Length: 340
Image 1: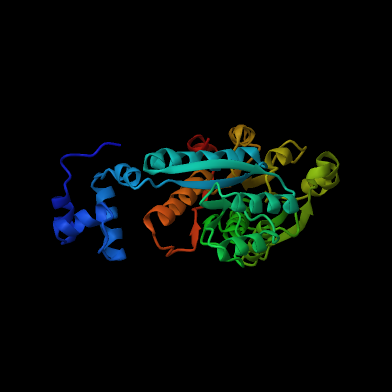
Image 2 (image 1 turned 120 degrees about the vertical axis):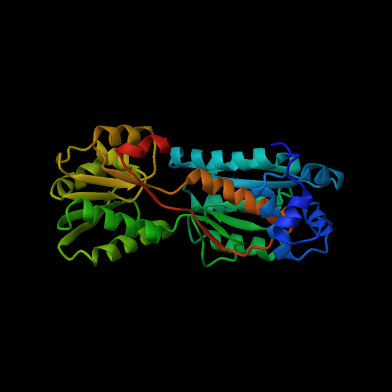
């Protein structure tokens, strides 16, 4: 991005009713500027397409900041999009002294907690963004924060921890939206099934609770399940629930296996919905096998987590919003191409 000569400090000052010297101090981080004024100046500069050369300022002070971005391995298609967002933020901010390192973890909570503890204690990073996929993460997050090491949660929250902020979906709202959507798609009466792969994870519990809550407004819709599919024994568990899925009018797949449910021998009239987008889901949307999906902007999640953490580290920006909830969007065949 290049500095636009037509946009000057004078123009920003006139727009905000500030002195040019105040605008200059804010843009160059020279202090003596109220936080609210600083925020307004930066927002105005961005809106007016004005860029001060922050990189020179950081380099002159020999400041660099390294953030560890922890991503899950499963589902790959989702976390690859989160990684893309983090990389987008890095490209935007690397000239200002930002370095990021992507670290993938699996579903072994105990092992992952040790990995996170090693990252924090390594001395190689200034902060970490991570998915708090289990209650076991709360202790390591709290210990890190208490030790002065910044931690934010990404996509999967640990709301009882001391994390600085969360960036991701509100899964209760996601489940509630899925319930309302499915009830309307089947005509407000009939039977619907909810499929999950966990009874206990925070994310799953939130979706199930939200889904049940939505059904309260549709008394003619009856719920089957939740039906559990075992990732460790996927083929057999799918066969075990296939019969029940054939008996319903609509199916909500709350986990990452929507494309596998789409491969089952379901009734042609069955409404099938789930979450997120990958190549198989896109194909099934276009073929009419999947009716709709709910997307949660994974690219934006990765970008915002890195950007906010960098602003906290480099600009001493206060964390005024602890829950940064990304928007939920319903995707059907007609608009699917914009999400893939």
